[in-house]
Image (cartoon, rainbow, N blue to C red; front, side):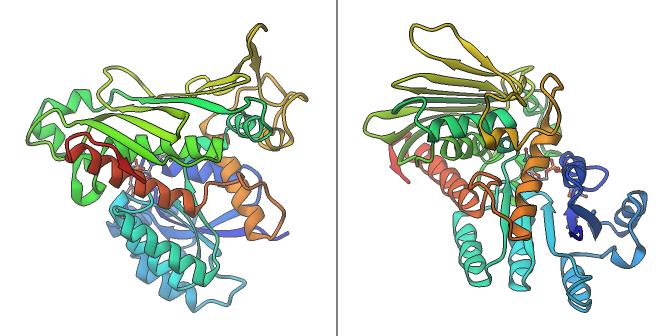
Length: 376
Ligand SMILES: NC(=O)c1ccc[n+]([C@@H]2O[C@H](COP(=O)([O-])OP(=O)(O)OC[C@H]3O[C@@H](n4cnc5c(N)ncnc54)[C@H](O)[C@@H]3O)[C@@H](O)[C@H]2O)c1
C-alpha cells in the first residue's frame, strides 16, 4: 500500500501541537508528510519545512497557494489529506476551501469559532463525501477505547451519573497581569472564538462524554468565571448537564486551577459498575463493581477488547502516552482513507466537532442569561 500523502497547515516549530501530529502520523508507517504551510511568515515557514526535510516545491505561502498548486498535480502525486493545526479562527476558512476542492481533512479542535460555521462544514462535507476528523486527542488512548467498548457492551448497566473534570493552571500566572494576558491568543476573541477555557478544554470533556457513552447531552446550566471585567473570555467554568431524566452530571473545566498541569479526569457511574480514568496516568483504567475489589485494567493485555488491543503497539508494561493516542487517531483516519473496515470510534469525526461548537455556544448562552438551563 502506498503511503498517504499528508499536507500540514500550522503546527510549525514554534507550536504546541505540531510535533504531536508529525510523530503521530509516522507511527503506523502509513503517512508521508509531503508539504504544507507552517507559519504565516514566509522565512519561518520555509526554514521549518526545510528542517523537517520537505522539498522546496511543496512549501507554500498560504492555504490558497497550497490548494492552487496541489490541484495542478496529477491525482497520484497530490496531497490526499491536510491537517489544520493553526489557532482556532483559521480552521473554518481553511477547512471550507479545502473541502470545496475535494481534500480530506484532519482538523484541530475546536472545529470553528461558531456553530453556524460548523454546520456549514457539515453540509459541504456531506456533499463532497470527504473524510473529516476532528482531533479530540484523548479519544485515542487504549484505555479510553476500552471504556467505550465496556460501556457499549453494557458492562456498566445503565449510566446514571457522569463527572468529567479538566483542570489546568497555566492561565493563573498571566490572568492577573493585563499586559501578559494580551499576549495569549487563546484569550483573544478574534483568534479563539467565543470562549477560552470551555472551547479549549471543556470541549474535550464534552466530546469524551458523548464519545464514550454514545448518549447526547440534552440540557446544561453553566457558571463561568472571567476573573476580570476587562478579560473578554472565560478561564473557568462549572456546567451541570442532563443526558436524560435520570442521567445527570457535571463538566468542570478550569485554566486557573493553580499549578494543575493537564488533570483531565473521567468518571462514569452505571447501575452495574463504574469506570475512572485520568489523562495524567493514562495506562490505568479503574473498574469498580459492588462487592468486588477494585480492578485496574492496563493496555495491551489479552483481557481487553479488540478495539483497545488494536490501539496498543507494544506489549503490556511499556507506557503509552499522548503521541500514541494521536497516532491511533491517524491510524483510524488511514483506514477510512484506504476504505478499510474501522470501528466507529476509530477517530473523532466531524459530527463530534459540530456538537462541540453547539456545546460552547450553549454554555456561553446559559452563563450570559443568568445561569439558566438551556437545551442543546
Ligand atoms: N487536541 C489537543 O489536545 C490540542 C492541544 C493543543 C492545541 N490544540 C489545538 O491546536 C490548534 C493550535 O494550537 P497550538 O497550541 O499548537 O497553537 P500555537 O500558537 O502553539 O501554534 C500555532 C501554529 O500555527 C501557525 N500559524 C499561525 N497562523 C498561520 C497561518 N496563517 N498559516 C500557517 N500557519 C500558521 C503558527 O506559526 C504556529 O506554528 C488550536 O486550535 C488548539 O485548540 C489541540
